[in-house]
Length: 380
Image 1 (cartoon, rainbow, N blue to C red):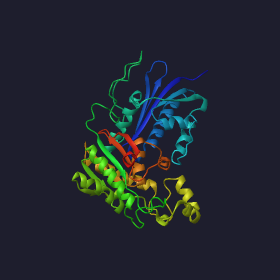
Image 2: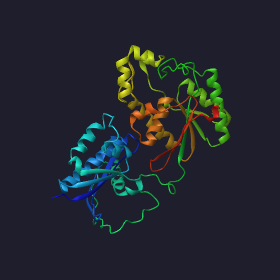
Image 3: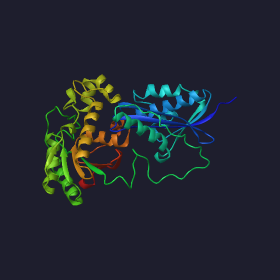
Image 4: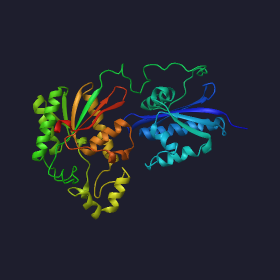
């Protein structure tokens, strides 16, 4: 006898990525659409991807509790989880591997299939995830509402134009806060491709770097949208920021958490030199965002947390405005990664040229939209 047929809708979110996180999961009868079970939980401080996997695990367990022989179709708006669980993408991040393994072991492999769906079709699980995060903010865990169960669906209902709370909505979220992310211009170390972090020689801009900073300033002034300028405390970023601030009559506000990574013993060395002197440390660093450069005080994961703090302060202080943020390769790549909800090791797959521009818009619901990446048209 074959088991029951269920649909599991699962979602997870993190307000800050990493930040306060929660998941939600719904089990439906595959034929009627009737809601059979709901699950949600506040997870504390973690990432979107961890929350999404935890939502998947909760949904599969709820389905198994209803019928251990069930055949389940999982529907999620996380492309990463769907592709990894379908076997088309590798699970590379060490924090994801045990979660993926746990999910695979809940029901027989042949009984579970995966389908990606757009966010607006995952509103029930999204609602539960946001309820769990709201509960966590109030210092409690999520509890199911004392309400009548959702009626069975006899026909697909039209989707509302606006997504639920916690998702991007184009019409009713007000003016987004836009961070224009400018990497500093070249220093003497840049064309040599040497590691230049927050604890090295703190080089200033080269002649070419000053030219690049002026070209960026000229382009930004012509657009006329920048209302504030924020920069890392390093000399090269301050010099780059000041070029735009002078043209716009603005002051440069220094944000310590936007500084570059501490590269420790790698400061001033080229990649080949680091590979020769510290091969094991470099290999480990490239494979794990929790690893630190030789003699460094921080990893890329540590950097991500401080960069997220800086982002949150800027977005709160300049809500609805356009802010020029002048920083470095690692912080800017991290802001882009966090906006996309991409895995941590994606920072190693981005190109970010000297004096290039990126732009991210942040909405009041905590969502973000990448608008521009590695634009160097002003330097041509």
